[in-house]
Length: 194
Image (tube, rainbow, N blue to C red; front, side, top):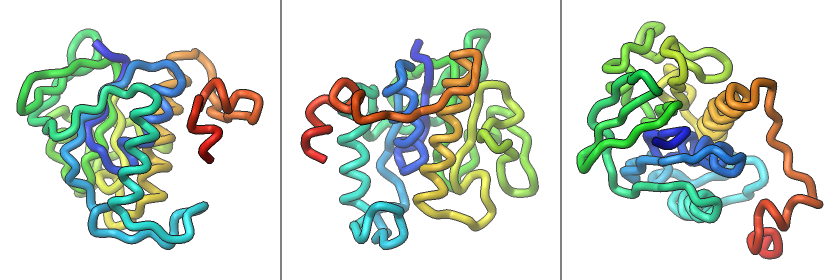
């Protein structure tokens, strides 16, 4: 059993995976590569002047992979259930378990519905930390917003979910700030490339 299971490999899911794994939580990410980012070109992402959505996704995946996230590319979640120890996500190939669950499936809210998450109209009801009505389950991006779908917002939602999980694990508010002195230890060879 991992600490965190993330369903969805778009900006929200990959950001949640990055924050969780980089800070010591074993993370499995299920990624069907069905993200809308493949139809996008980003001119509005802070720090990026212009990048094709698919190129952005490849860069983000490389960053997540460099931290050791177990990224199951091409694996689709078909059901999810709460267990005594957390969550069990049934996939098209097997099942994975984690103590926390992050749903980052875009506008597809089927898994949140089958898990029993509360809804506010057509969207999953989540608080500011992206936690749903089901303890330990988080919903991000388009599934919690009626029409505000954007890569920066989704990445922010993924970060909020991961930071809340880290805060729960640490027993206090957790802040994810890397400083230059830590760059080599945290980023390894990537620090020199940037």
